[in-house]
Length: 306
Image (cartoon, rainbow, N blue to C red):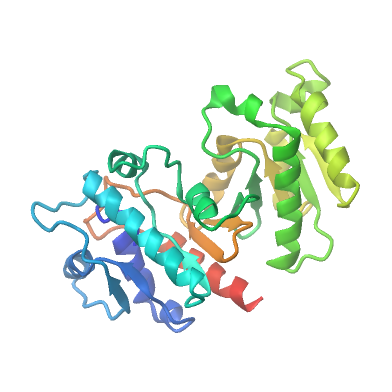
C-alpha cells in the first residue's frame, strides 16, 4: 500500500472498490489494517478487500501527510513481504503504491534510491529499466534518479545498449509488437547539431545504436528530444529510449499525469506502479485521484494474460 502517510492507501482502496477493477483478478493488499480502516472512514465506506495486515504502523499520533522513519520502515516491510510472496510463486504480479524516499532513508536504508533498483537487487536482476506507459507513448529511461550534473557520465555504451535491448524484448513480449520501431534520443539540444552542443551523440549514443543494430532492426537516432515524442504520438515509433529522467517524464506527465503507468522491465515478475508520488499535501483528505493506480492494475492484469 506504499507509504502509510501518503495517498497510497487511499488510491489502493478506491481502485479495488471499483467493480471494474476488483473482478479482473484476485487481489491481496499488503499493508496495515489501522491505516486502511482509517481511509475507509474518511471515504465513508467499508473496504471489502483481502488484506495481509503487517500491523506495523504506530497508531499513536498518526497523521497523514507527514514523513516519518517508522512509515519508511513499514513501506520497506511491505515490499519485502511482496517479494517473499512472489518468490514462493503465490502471486503473478506486483503493483506498488507510492513510497517516500526520505522516510525510507531516515529509517536506515541509506542507499535506497527507489522501488525499481531495490526490486532488481533483491530479485537478483542485473539488467532492468523503467518504462513509462501511456495510451500512445512508451518511454524507457537510460538513466533513472541521477543528478543532472552526473547524467552525461552515466550515459554509456552499455547503459544505452541495455535500454534499447530491454525495450525491444518487452515491446515484443508484453505488447505483442513483432517488429518494434525504437527511437533513441540525443542527450544534448538538437542531438548536439553535429557536435556543436556536446559530443556524447558521436562518442556514445551513435556507437551504441550501431552495436545494437547488429541484432535489432528498426532503431532510429539519435533524434532531437524536442520533436521525437510528438513523432511517436503520431505513430512513427513504438517507443522512445530517453537519456535521463526529466527528458522523458516532462512530456510524459504533461500527457498522462493522471493515468500514466511505470512498468519495470527485466524483473522475473510483472511490476507496475502509478507514475506519481505520495502527494503528502492531499493525503488523508479523500480527494486523491486513483486513475493512475487503476491503470497500473489494469496493465499488470493484461500483461499476465498476454
